Amino acid sequence: MGHSLKFRMTRVPTYRFQEARAVVLERILALRDMPRTEMTGLIDAAGRVLMEEVRADRDQPPLPRSMRDGFAVRSSDLPGSLRVVGEVRAGGVFAGEVGAGEAVEIMTGAPVPRGADQIVMVEHTAREGGRVVTEKPGKPGGFINPAGSECRANEVLVPAGTLMDFVHVAALASAGATQARVYRRPRVAILSTGDEVVPVEQSPTEVQVRNSNAWALAAQVRRAGGEPVILPSVSDNEEATRRAIESGLTHDLLLLSGGVSAGKYDFVEPALAALGAEFYFDRVLIQPGQPLVFGRARGRFFFGLPGNPSSTMATFELFGRAAVQLLAGASGAPLPLLSARLAHDFRHKPGLTRFLPARLAGDGATAALVPWAGSSDIAAMARANSWLVASDEREHYAAGDWIQVIPR
Image 1 (tube, rainbow, N blue to C red):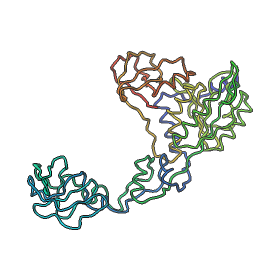
Image 2: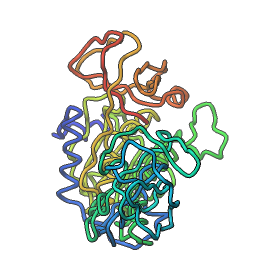
Image 3: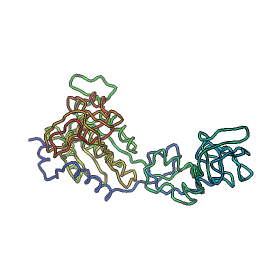
Image 4: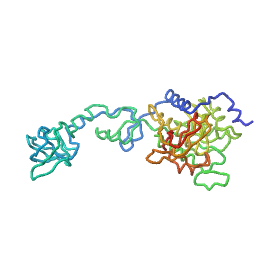
């Protein structure tokens, strides 16, 4: 009996999918060390978690503003024929005041002249010499964005703890913030294991594979907000695996690829145990990715991801991505689940939650499985743009049924 098989006979919990994901979130939130903070420019702020709230430096808009191209008028004059007494465009100001029977031509975003309380869209008017005619009825406040209607001075624009995207960057810029205090990206070590794994630049023999897992994980880590560090791959040797893991545990998170099954030469768990690891689980009732390991050693969290590429990519998206986001300072990490109608009948054996390569079409309205040859089929994954989620409690789905999907 191999070392790995003996080790896996110890009492380590097995969970269903949602249970395992809850363990990851709960453990990391309870035990994480909050990352250090740093200042970053706006160009690098997206994808980072904001440490300090950002407040508006003035009312937005500071003056009543037109929401349309048209004419600023007094609603009490409508409908009617009005004398055009001037023009105002965005960035300008009309010096006078709109009086009875008068109108000022106005552009979108321009400040509303004094005396006017309605904007009539240009499409609803006709010009007759120096006059403008409209049949629109009076509607006080129509197409006017009042001063302070978007936010008030000193109001919180972006709360602390926000995982920022381009909209938050725009909010910071609108308040005159040229920098933001954010949490540092966690450094994530990526370690591939296996005698068969060779560098991507090397021509493999028929029994070897290029190390695609490390590069896929690096891209996934970066997208999740982490800083990937690819370590040299390690052969199927327990002592070499232990030394490599020890090096990886100097980072904020360690991702191991391969070596977590019950085979004779799967040394990841014994090596972790030798380093005093606490295992929270080492099997999850999912496919692909059933022999998934999660734990903590030397104050650092680790995942032992199955080595087949589809399993590695899927388990990172389901579990590792949330870990990176939380270690980057996020307060939560919801799974991006959508619902789509199944394009065809589908049947599977209950008991495992399955995450199968699928293609969303029709603006995400329908999902169809992508034919694949199993967990090593990278080509099928490249043709897919999502994972179809088949419940562990349901055996059959008919065409047209709603089913959960995780977009990629």
